[in-house]
Image 1 (tube, rainbow, N blue to C red):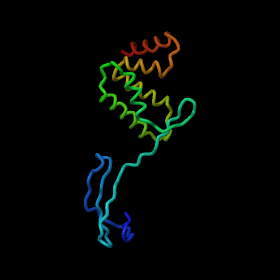
Image 2 (image 1 turned 45 degrees about the vertical axis):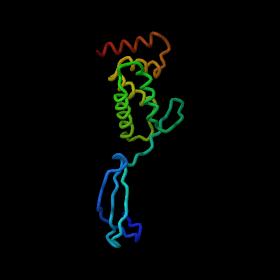
Image 3 (image 1 turned 180 degrees about the vertical axis):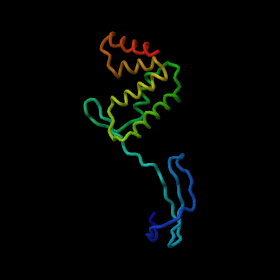
Image 4 (image 1 turned 30 degrees about the horizontal axis):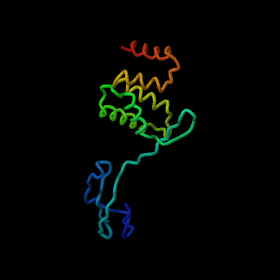
Length: 151
């Protein structure tokens, strides 16, 4: 780390503390040349994820959209908001940890349906009916039959 006072390239860490609710580390450093102290912050670099929609338009990844969709599908069901938030965090981590910087809405939708199926089957069917755009009762029944066969 370059000293802001004398531009010397080497410094030593005198003190480290978590800051910003554990999302960064605050480090007090001392220049090995001029002995002046300065503060640096270390954070994890997160690259922006772009979502490719069905019409090929692109927009930034929005965790809140996933949360709202899962909450809406789980309305009046015995699913806690903590479970939904944990599922959204899991989905976000999968997307962030993938090597791609662009992810399709299809991939996100499948991840959401996988998590909802584990949380509540009714919420899963609600979400699937909108996501898969069931055109008639037969397509809806095929999805229900798949759920029953998996049991």
